[in-house]
Image (tube, rainbow, N blue to C red; front, side, top):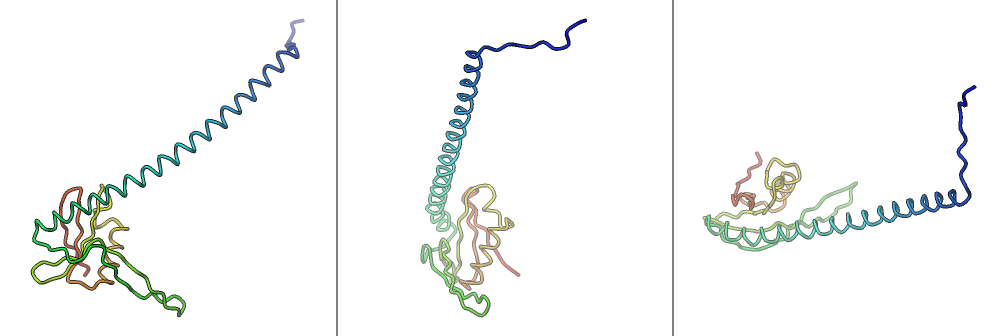
Length: 158
């Protein structure tokens, strides 16, 4: 009669070696997860700093682009305020645009954007921000300065 099952005998020394290898494998996986997590956080911090620096460079270049189109910068980072009433309680909200500019006797708020998505006026976050500026500053117009394309868009809310 053929044997259906064979029993593999493992010595105590081989068993201890396998347990040690398993423990080392688990430790290596935990260490790898820790290193991956640390590198991911480091990358995220770097990405935030890189985007901030790109934005600052864009704002600096925007002054030249605005000037080349006849706009004069009146104020950088102008602060506007609005009152928001929540459940009967008034809350004062401060808003800070990139530039208050003028051209031909009219005043505009200029918002500078860089990248592929943010400069699009139809991008939800940008559109909401521009609408908020329109309400808060009550100027003659809102300008969206796309520094990726070096274009100025005049935004109107109807």
